[in-house]
Image (tube, rainbow, N blue to C red):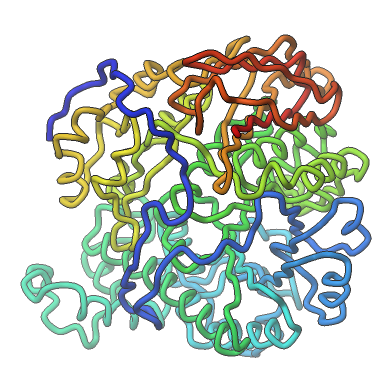
Length: 611
């Protein structure tokens, strides 16, 4: 492939690009899945204007305008009925694959037989539950490959179905696979048996002979490594370089994914209809994306970096990646973030998180109750003050018409390649951060692999973009290599040696004054010629936990990013949250539209219309 560096590009396409459902997804076959043929993505179950709760509290439904219980709904048919009566459209109940140790201990006296085992052969606890005990037992990490633990999990699924839940949430869905790379697991009997079958079906005879594994019937991976002098200390330090390390990780990830797929199919069978599925996944790293084809939405913890005391950039990357995956994200912050918020009363900072999520087309869960965690305190809780947070969710519900059926506008595509990420290459978050800070209208296109099937970028997918960005160290698969090497793509390909190479795309379609003080994102209505401009203030002042209003805001939109002629553009609805009037003005020219807003305190939405 031509490894040329970025050079300035002409504006190649005038056509507007709207990132919507099914852009890069088609019909896909999932190996070893209970149902092999399925078309993705599913119908959208989360609306852009939904107010999502993480924890159930009927007293808070009305103040916040709750429409979805996304995570830990009460496992009670009476509570679900009450929620429906009060306007909650979708009610999910969660099953914790790592957190329900107490229930497992009560489920069977043989619970220790189902624990994960590290390379030393010892069971271990879930690290962030160090302060939890039940019947004098710690919070054991149970193995999702164990038939006994799966029996328990299926019993929990029957309870969830019986209570009448609308949707299923799984916390810590990676189960055992999540312990491979940092807790030296799992080497229990179930995992050793499963790995033997994996090797029989996935590794060539020649490769097995090279490893001196002619007879797999009694093969035990832990014993095999111990015979080569590998101690627990050496395993922890050298795991990735040891024989069969890649195969062992592959086995664990695919085993976790296959089990969740089967779990979901069983939920559909027992419910007698489609049961939407969400998981807690950070969306960071290939292991956390592997379950995507089986999901309806992510309901998850996302690091908001509260310690930096600034409007965060990382969630924007997560939301853009979710767009590329065609899955909604209903997010919350991390336990560490909430501990910081609780200790320092950072309500204004949290409001920026909420505004950011909706401005980028996703949903930050209402923080009326949040899990906090520090190593010193362990688990504790934050009860968000209603008067501080409910008004912004009321603003969302009141302006649903400016949120629902609007999708992001993009002129630049950044390619996420799962094959590269699994090798520690092709990281795109730094590039996306630069683009977001400069208000460049971009999207992420996803190239999958055997961990992430069904996501295949075609040359035609790239035709609508003026520029296509890839990191210099990307190591694409043959299929993606062929697409990137095509002549039409080469003309617009930007190979970024540094994230700052993306800065050359600034001010081409959207120009904002004053600079670097606002996030500006455009979303176009899929049914009508309407654009919603979301303006989010970045000027958070940590000295008093408040916002410094940005005054005399000017936004220039070039013709290429608009759905109609600039001269025919009309000012539609203007909505401002917090201080300031619903006020804006526009001036139209042949090649651009100029929008002026007197002041932005936190979040303003300006609608443009075309006849």
